[in-house]
Amino acid sequence: MVNRAKQKGTAWETRLVRYLQSNGFPYAERRALSGKLDKGDILVPGVCIEAKNQRQVNLAAWVDEMVKEKANAGVDVGVVIFPRRNQSTARAYCVMELSQLVEMIK
Image (cartoon, rainbow, N blue to C red; front, side, top):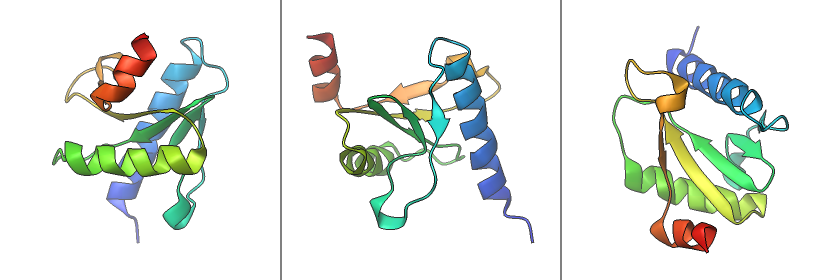
């Protein structure tokens, strides 16, 4: 039996990795699932990326998940990336906590 949600998520993660690799991040890679010690879906050195491709947007839960996963990954920066409907990968949305953005800007 085919899990369509899993296929959709995998396809989105693959698109993101290819986009990142072709835009200056050659070491971007999909991460293996790690159960409750998950370290995010995609790793760019120093950044934990939680990729979401769901119809229902749930920013609070997604950001909370990313915060845990970035701690598990031992990195300081984490971001949730989800697609804009009917747009290219480059036009996806990125969400993180404001405190993290402030630290990045400093």
